[in-house]
Amino acid sequence: MYDMKNLSRIPHLEANASEGMDAFWKFDRAAFEDGAVSALTKQLAAVAVALTTQCPYCIELHGKAARDAGATDAQLAEIALVAAAIRAGGAVTHSTHLFPKSEG
Image (cartoon, rainbow, N blue to C red):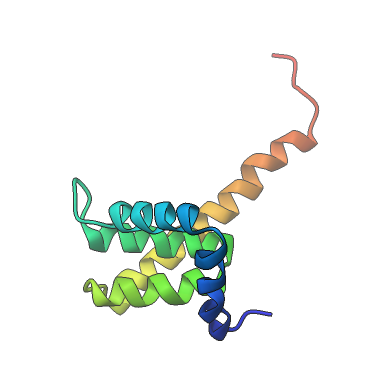
C-alpha cells in the first residue's frame, strides 16, 4: 500500500484542486522555515509526529529533511524515543477511563 512511487501522483491533486494544493504548499514551506524554532528542530518535531502517526511517507520525507538540516543519528534516535514515550503515555493516561471515579 505504501510506496514512495505513489507520491508521483500528487500532480493529480494539483491539477484537480490547484487552489487548495497551492495553499497547502505555501503553508508547508512557511511552517518549516527557520523562525523562533530552527528548521532542524521543526524537522525533528515532524519526525516525532510521523513516527507517532506511523506515516511511512512522512517518516521517510521528514527523516531525510531532518538529516539534510543537520540531524545526527543520536538526535534521530532520541526523537524516536520521545515519540515512543508520547504514544505510551497516551495509553497510560487514557487507561484511567477504564476505572470508576474514586470518591475522594
